[in-house]
Image 1: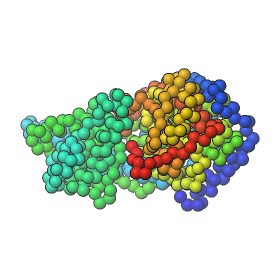
Image 2: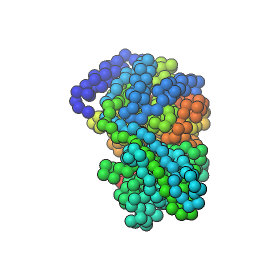
Image 3: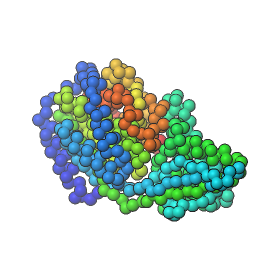
Image 4: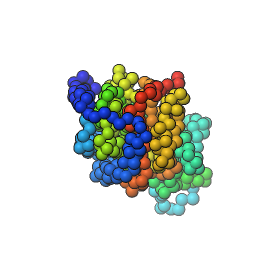
Length: 481
């Protein structure tokens, strides 16, 4: 952004810091204050009501879309009603739009005369387009990158299908993130590698555990020059093509007509609940405002945004003002670019030391069992009062890691800002994630109250901590999920 676009944000922030001097002293981190925050959040449906507003009234919010713009307005206006100091931080975002998407199997061994079979699919973010009339090509089914590379020249001219299952048993046992990471590598890098080997299109088995014939969209790492059509197919259709390919060649007719438009103007929504003693020190609570376009993004990540809004609502009800500023951020463009987080980190680069901690809730609305944190081992003991406060609602677990790599917080964490996120039961999260099923009815109101309670209590604890928790130390060469 240019200098002119920064002036309003700096002016508003300066005004908010000045206003902080008039507030009453913070009640601090005594157990009674932490308990009041926890209990007030657990007794409120504020976040659930805001979730209904965002999911049902605005709907899908892919970057650059009218829905994304409407969400910025809705959330900013609501945060102003709560009494927060609101800033809209300009962000240039990708603008990819979905077009027609159809596919059918038109040739395979044993096909009865006149019969074709529909394949249910959804274009992946950044996908290239077929001609309007579509393309017809043989499907090459592979089950790993090694298997693809072993095909060599046979890939040229084919539609490559990566039939790699999501390990739901792993997800059921608390390793949903690991299962997702293993399968999503094929969505992210599979189309690019197939394109470089001469494929005319790429298909990826849905990255999720729900076999209800729904596709899971998401981003790819396709690049100009090798931007072939790419789509996610349902689990059932991927398995069908794998079975048919064992009988003989399979031919598909595929039509995908997405467009990549010029970058669009959008915003991070930033709202400050100003500190009384150290207003220039910041604790972030956040979720990302954008969503994929197949549904209303209730779990990914409207629930995270409204949980962060619920932090300010909780403190407003109690008339609690922290010593440090608690900053709500509704990030823009987490899904297909990450530019909201990158823009904020670049703007605050010189001020990173003033950021005490950054919390993002972007793992769905399953029940939270505690907090994850990228703090040093020596800092863990400092969080005993927080753990005690959250244990009452069954959320007293505290998991330390060198690096979390959470959503929009990558750059801040690399700059030394400790990251925080809830430790969530995500065993069924990838049933809905990036699918047409990610809607308001999938969010349990009691679980959402717990998300607000964990986030609000953690934010208050960080904003009033007397002992420094230290900085995040990202090991050289560390990878993020």
